Image (cartoon, rainbow, N blue to C red; front, side, top):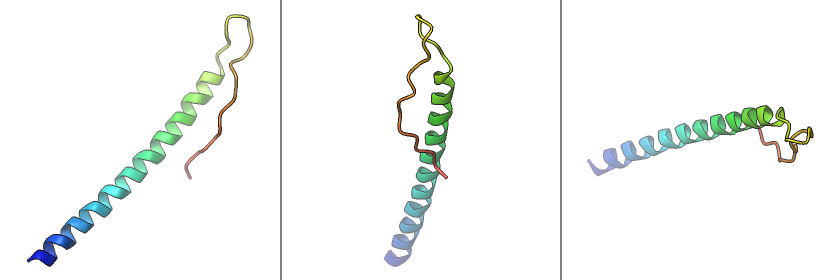
Length: 59
């Protein structure tokens, strides 16, 4: 029935939204880890790389 199809589509959309949220959180954490690694590099005159960024780590 149409109602069952609508329910199935709604459940599928909810599952995809959860997966997207999880992927976004993973990406945010990986980005923060990469920025931590980049901060360890020094530029040619010996100065440490700038540490300017807004930290937004997912919970």
